[in-house]
Length: 338
Ligand code: HPA
Ligand code: ZN
Image (tube, rainbow, N blue to C red; front, side):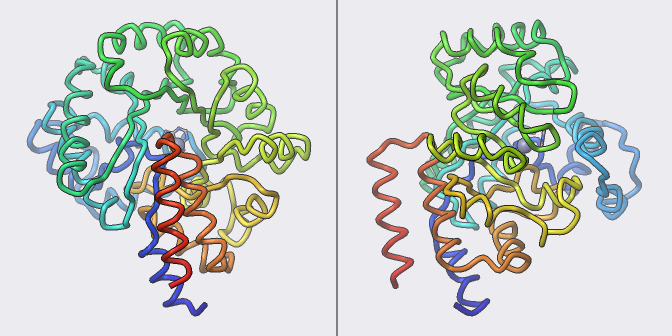
């Protein structure tokens, strides 16, 4: 297939997105607008200066700006507008289902009520379902640089609203904060019926992926790209079809890979893993889902068959029902054969 033909295919395929931090969709223009509306002082003179500051050397250098940026989000309407802007972008990329992360501790630590955050996000998701037919799930992420006790306090705040929360995740600074630190918290989440995912093997070693699987019962691994350092782990992930929510532009911008041509996405697919592509924090990393897929196609020479496999994997890895997965798999086959 020619390049324009794969571009058309990337656009035409229905896809899910399963690794998206809603706070990471805060575009510089909205950052400025909300800062003004809420009288929050920013250390930047212009949108261009913000973009120029988005040059990262590792995960922590990004997280420092990401948490600082989130300080402009104050009201329910702010969270609504943030989430709605993402839904519009997702719809434009032909994402038909999205499972998004939010970081309540980033907001409650600043005195923003949990319910303010939740109401703003879920109101936008409901509107996206109505306007675009975009379905969604919401995953509460615990910040791993904070204590397990802090995580328990956040879970207590979330408990009255568990009918609006579909699962839990683990994000923030990976190195030095292994999954085992949160074993009791995730056991409690499991008792409450909340399925788990966890960031692991982004900057952290393959051992953190084992821990996420065996100690947290993670059903998906977010990133997980360092699994290829451990052949036994790759076998386990392939055997159980444990999905990896890979984020190529994120990996490039956070120097997990030096060059996109070094990314192991094709290797993961060739090993029979349920890898799929996501945008992670698209406002910070230079693009939404289709831009990630095109960057991989350009740098790695992804074939049309691999692009189709990634779209199929994105549904297999989701928490949609078996019937919905089947319906989308058939639609993908129809488009791929057209
Ligand atoms: N890794 C860990 N924490 C995060 C990320 C990430 O890529 N994005 C937002 N929080
Ligand atoms: Zn992430």
